[in-house]
Length: 329
Image (tube, rainbow, N blue to C red; front, top):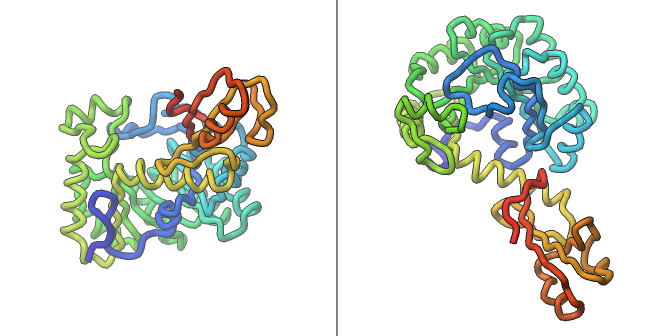
């Protein structure tokens, strides 16, 4: 029997550990490099990142491992998901980062990694396993990439398949093959339309008509798959774009704020921080913190401040964890 909500996500068995922690907002998103030698027409990675050797910790640019550790501390992370690009194109970096996470946060800090499998030979997989990788998720878009899946299973790794909900994949054959090999789970993702993949997806009949950027065509196709194979012994999980945008990201933001925000900043249930910036010729240290633009205080005390002082200007600012402004008034 299927569990969950069709608009948020469905699953037939226990969720993979990486997905469980993601639902708690506890997974640090590690974009380790944009380098990739595949060219999937549905790839949602932006032009600014695709095939560029850049790093991000959640939404923040990362210069080194210290930035990843700092972001993990900021959100009280329970684990990390390493993505790209293909992380195996920077295998030394990926292995070192996994070991760093385990050293700083302990063996229970859950790390999973995404790869097409193109470069997943025994040496690379063995290094990842010895480093402490907890879960590896393959995107076998070509027949020859399945050999990497088989190698990982033989090495005793926790192996999953993760593919988008499109008709390019024969899901009946994919499920049977995964079971035969010994794969533990299959994750199915709703297509997300982005500026880079939009022209090709639109040509194939997809529109950004489900949630913020999801494809209803992909969504309906995924629901059909889940209903057809709900009694499978293999763990199947459908993750919607609505979930990623409105649940996972928001939950991760809220988790970050509980650790990192100041007492004078208001946490918006939508996943943003709201603060007031007050310009005044007075000391407002009892209300908040001085900045270059004025005093940062809670919007809830602005009226009180206006009654006590001659206020020059008040701005109400809504920001994301990476300090990107959402609104300003």
